[in-house]
Image (cartoon, rainbow, N blue to C red):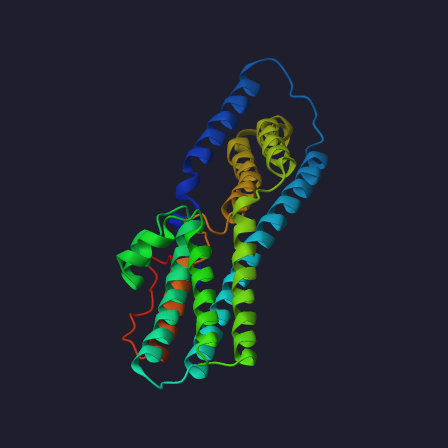
Amino acid sequence: MIVGHAPRIRHTLYPAWRTLTVLFVWDSVITIFYYVMPFRAPELPITLFGTVLGLFLGFRTNSAYQRWWEGRILWGAMINASRSLSRAVLGFIPDDNVAATSLKRLIVRRQIAFVHALRCQLRRQDPAPEIERLLGPDATAEVMLRANPANALLHGTTRMIADIRREGLIDTIQQAQIEQTMVDIANAQGGMERLKNTPLPAQYRSFPVFFARLMCLLLPFGLVESLEWATPIGSSVAGFMFLAGLQVADDLVDPFANTVHDVPLTAMCRTIEIDLLQVAGYDAPEPLKPVRNVLW
């Protein structure tokens, strides 16, 4: 996620220089051809075309932003649920013996491993190094046998809570409270996986792209009469605005794509790790800082 008072120019114009170059060359060719050859460009209802195209782009951009914002809300819910789980486990399970203390600290570490594993799965990365860092190679080998390692970690934590209840360390009311928090975590995970695995409908992706590119081809024909030799500049800028609308939607449609526009999953997982380790009595790492105005 790009942070700071305003995005740097390289984050906006540098990725688009090829598009601007192509537009400028095309518009220059049409303008030169118009003045050299004995023909007149047909009158095109550019205003009408632009209005209809703006509606297409508006629907697409709004839908993409809703997906991005929902992803951020789900990760906010994950942060809150992780804090609630650690607070309940550390508060409900007594420190009667070394085994009980070790067990509840293990549950806290498993929750940290869970959010890191979920982050890696959403970004199509290998979660094994993060799980091994927190739980060791044996636990990693066990959960990596499953198709969904993050869900395997969550299921294992639920079984540990049930075992603690059978040993009499917590009562049924406390178990129900912890289980409700686990349900909130599972619901947030399901929402994230839904966003990742469900793309926008094909019409939202194909029609705006086709019409925006067609509009860029037609713009110089409709503007050359009024802009004359300034047509390459004016038409390129106008076409770039339409293509920028397409790019904004592409940048936001997948909030877990591991790009500079993505929801900062690594930073939020680090926040969870810091909060849970500190309440469990461990040393915590430093918060993640932006790198060149990008928070990952």
